Image (cartoon, rainbow, N blue to C red; front, side, top):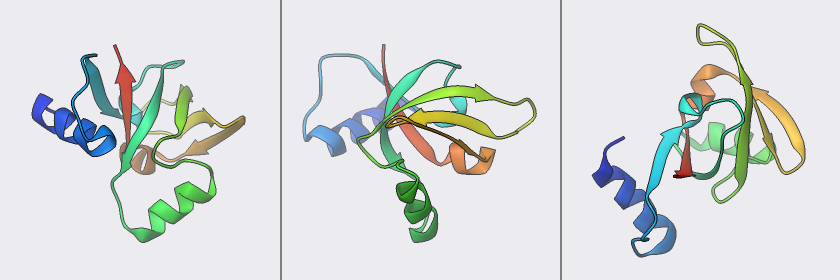
Length: 99
């Protein structure tokens, strides 16, 4: 995701730019043990509802616990719960990572 898109996503969150450098990536691009705050979920009503029912929604902190090689499931922790999502679903979860 480019710098312009990152600034746009930040302005959606806060209504202003922040001084800190923020990086927005999808959940598949996080390293194991890395955390961030969910910014947006790219997808329709169904996937958004499904993720929200599991506790993954905009503004929530998530931590990537583990992942598998070759597009396997990704395990993440949010709100005291640990859950696994498929690679395609994880690709649609955008996370703001502070540098």
